[in-house]
Structure formats: structure tokens, C-alpha cells
Image (tube, rainbow, N blue to C red):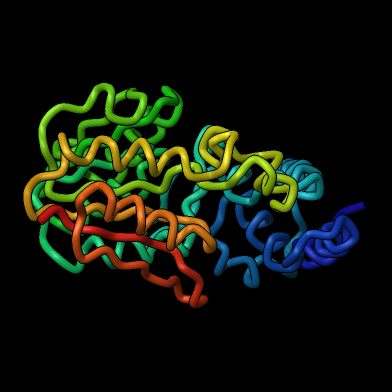
Length: 278
């Protein structure tokens, strides 16, 4: 029995809704576009058409995986961030819209050398280099797979000549000073991990989510390295969990930084702490 694209989408939406997926109609549409290898905007055009056996089979597989909470971004292999499309995988944290708060703050002043600690997919470093032509960047990550993913995204957005991506345990392979240091480190406390959605808890890399302790270990390590690596007058910006603003701001002040500020995201939750080296 043949099925039209519209019928397949209705059935897929029902399956995802029954599985408790948040926005089943949107996911069904995006995954159909991926299965049919067309832009999501064109799905309406193919709605009355019959799906080929190959596309129907591919679609069924994608919907089955989404029903067990594999993130859509992992199924289609990409995610939008700050107006660009980034390649993602299960090896890196998904770029998230709230991280754009860090990007906006970083771009509010020019910079020449940027260090991204825990580069992940490369979305922060690559975006900053793409927006600030002429700047040079170093991105480090303990995960070799993340370094490869970040390198691929640097090539994709044509900043690879200005991006140096290295495997490093925080500052261990970092030399020199930077006028901008950024990081979206693992900040979820171990006792908060169970509160995360199944998509995040089961399918994103644990080492990018939690420090296995109180959620503040990374900030202690970052603040400890600022004296050696943050240039005079340079800025540091870190993403935080919504309850960590006061603690991280206090660490930055203790490290000798001035103009320490906690910035909210678009939902009004504390999201970024920034400080400046006097």
C-alpha cells in the first residue's frame, strides 16, 4: 500500500505524540524533509505525492529513533546557531539558543585573539571568528572527537586559517595570552543530572554536561588560569547555569577581575558572567 507524504507525516506525528515528544508535528516535518533530502520549507509541496519505498523506510527509521528520544539534531547531523548551520553529533553538546547571549556579549567589543575552553562543536569559536574578521582563535577540548567536529565546522564556515584547534585538558596545552577568553563548560551538578530531559541525559556527552561534582569545578580551573593567559584589559565570558551567577562572579572577583557582571538570557535567567583584567 502506498502512502502520501501527508499521510506519513500525520502517522509519524501521532507516533511521536504517543511517545511524549514535545513538538511532534515540527519534528515529523523536519525528519520527513531529511528523509526526502529536501529543504523543510518544501515539505508542503510534496505532501500530496506518494513516498518512494526508500524514503518511507528511511523516514520510519528516523521516527523510531526520535520516539526513543534521539535528538533531531543528531538524526539530521546539524543544528542552527547564530544564523549559521553547524554539524553536530553525539560527541558534542548541541549548540543552544541561550548560548547566543555569550556571543552577543563577546562581540560588543573588538578582540584580536580569542581562546575557547571546551570548544565542543566549535559553535562559539567559529561564530566569533566569522563575525570578527581578522581575529585569531584557539579552541581546546579534552575530547578528540570534539576537536575533529570543531575543525570540520571551522572549514565549513571558512575560518580554518584563523582557528587553531587542539586537544587539551583546559589550559594544559595553551600558551600565550588572549584578549578574550570564552567558555561554555560542564556546569550541571551531579545531583541535578536526573532532572534533565531524556534527550540531553541519554544522548549528549556526559563530560560536556557535568563535572561529576557541584557544577562549579570548571569555573575554579578557568579562574586559576586567567592570571597567565588573560591579557591586560582582556575579557573573560563564561556560560553558567541559572543559579550559579553569584558564586561564579565571586570567583572572578577573587581572581582579581573588575567590572564583573552577570547577564541574563532572553528568558531573563542568569546565563553569562563576564569580567575584565584591569
